[in-house]
Amino acid sequence: MTRVINFSAGPAALPEEVLRQAADEMLDWHGSGQSVMEMSHRGKEFIGIAEAAEADLRELMAIPANYKVLFLQGGATLQFEMVPINLLAGKGTADYVYTGEWAKKAIKEAKAFCQVNVVASSEDKAFTYAPAQSSWKSSKDAAYLHYTANETIGGVEFQWVPDSGSVPLVCDMSSNILSRPVDVSKYGLIYAGAQKNIGPAGLCIVIVRDDLIGKAVPTPPAMLDYKIHAENDSMFNTPPTYSIYIAGLVFQWLKRQGGLAAIEQKNIAKAKLLYDFLDASSYYKNPVAKADRSRMNVPFTLRDAAQDEDFLKGAKARGMVQLKGHRSVGGMRASIYNATSIAGVQTLVDYMAEFEKNHG
Image 1 (cartoon, rainbow, N blue to C red):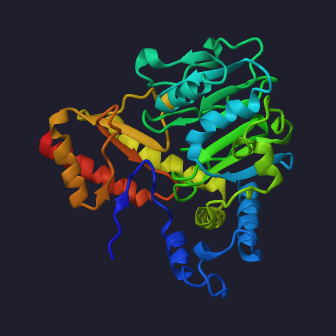
Image 2 (cartoon, helix red, strand yellow):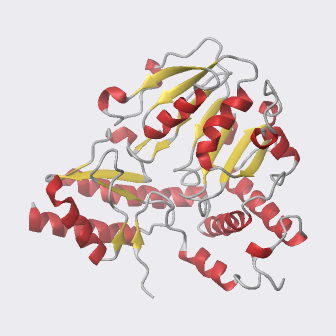
Image 3 (tube, rainbow, N blue to C red):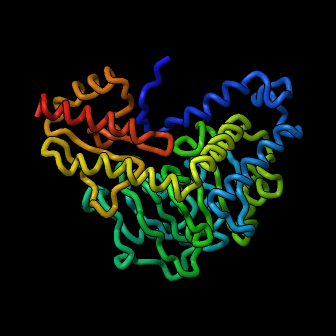
């Protein structure tokens, strides 16, 4: 069996070790005589799996004791609504940073619940940079400040954490969570869809400070209430059991890699390899300001867009897939999450050099 080099933005590549372990345990998890997919979420076997996954995530991210970890469904998109529903706490305004398509979606949903104050926007330069905080225009009485740590489509990543003062800082960390160490104590709430660096699609992780739970006005429907999910250890309803299991295996894999400090160095090396090539080329171009380039998602264009299809066909012939850019921006995009090896990035760079030589 030959596995492709998968540059998909999500669902994304998973570590091969994790997939092999899951395959080995598919029919019989640890002598239980059943697959994890068949287990009752109330049974001791699965409860043990969920507890271990949470413990490993807490260890990896050094999550303080006064934060709850929730394993939810609905993806990060549902959090666009759950955040204002739970965190407005009677206030009428929330601050948002507008840096691309995912921030745009979060802003749109929040407007159904409150007045959204866009503190800063990078729309003036086609979302190719992260606005310096010195330019932000914050509200006097915002319930929270929301930003998107990494814009998957545009390839813009905050290399710094905004200072929100006494206002709770909320972050959509879907596409760069677990790619580097994070000081969780600087945040009121972090949420992340799983299908980039955590596991299969279908799971969303929410890390929320205790004092922000149970303050919603009015009280939300049960499935939209962080308090209900926290009180029930994320099992108010049947959780996405298999996705939690795979996420737990990924957390264990990350620990074997040396944790987030070690994986960050690998991610820096992969991104440098690709960006250095792009900067040295006259045929390819990356539009993002250098200080704000994403380590996870690298968009680039060819000098002649008419050659895009040939580029993609050649890449596929060499075992590389999912390099086509998002339909809203075109071009190409290489997503190089934790599970992507430096050898895979080198294969891409070698191919890009060959293509430029033959077509440039």
